[in-house]
Image 1 (tube, helix red, strand yellow):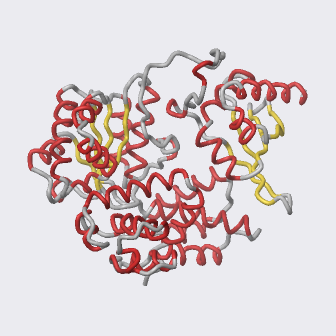
Image 2 (cartoon, one colour):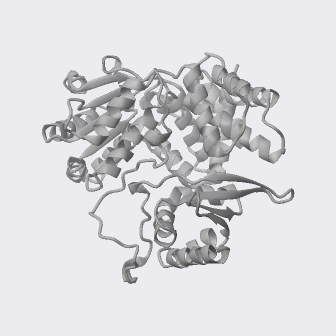
Image 3 (cartoon, one colour):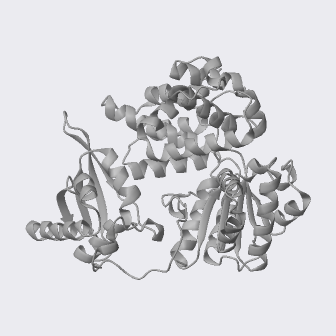
Length: 469
């Protein structure tokens, strides 16, 4: 019987091989080892050599894995990874795979001359939604602080552009779950309406695109693209406060989409009335649908969020430790996730139990427990210390690699941790203009997506901000 299921897995590998490049197959799929298949629970268990391989498979190939497993093993197969965490001591961890969504579909790499496989199917022409497939309603835990926005969000996803909740404007403090919620709306909408053109974009990226289109004399193309969107999701719109031309352009896009019954979803850290610099004609349009406040989660909701994440990550943490974390994380979902990730890393690397002592040690390093705001000088000091360069070198005009990296990171952190507009940040960091700040922030965001070593550097510097007294 085991040989039969192992043969099924070999069939899966053959199908995967025909749908990815040879390099992708040898790097990510060849090292996977078949462990077992349980017909009673319809669960396939496979072993992967490291957490990094698991994360990459879940991020890039979950849709392909779901298809081949359904074809070879039958529908509704539950995939579980056994991840080797410590080869020396033969330690491993079992984690159930995420459920795939429509936007997880793998993109063809070099298949222009390849014969169609049985997994290929005709799909409508679409765009890259820029959505995060892991941020769904299934892992967005409901509580009193988010019940209304979450309920309305589900309704909008099921009937985009058809309800009175258009536009849907969500606001709340940093870390309360705004980005997760608007992503979940987009993901659910794409699942229910695959033919719709759904797009998530940050306000900063929208501004970068507009600035680039202006420079290349392609503003009409830029506007025409956005006029084709069925569900437009824009995050952090407070960053447009001083971007007059960007606001004017978005005003025309907004009007067209709204008149044609397209769904618009906006997120900000403040309500429309507090958006300084925005024109009244745009603010009145923001307010004509539904404005919903997303509050920071209370302790009980934080505990529920922690419990859910522990269950998904295969962690066992006592209730008293979970409550301590929830009470200390200042109602920030990001802090909660960061603490759990740190606890997991410590427990694996040092082969220790997750107890109250370890939790206190991690929280002291990961959670900001004071209200003193960071300044540009604070940011420059910590970034310069990390790269072992001087402030004068960063503020200067040299294009030396370390200077540029420190300069761009300083601008990014200044955007994130201060309330200064891009023009003011540019003036304080070497007398540069706002477009340089916007470009630097965009460069950092792109690098964080592809450079794992840089992500570790970034987290190390950011942690020093949270330790500021």
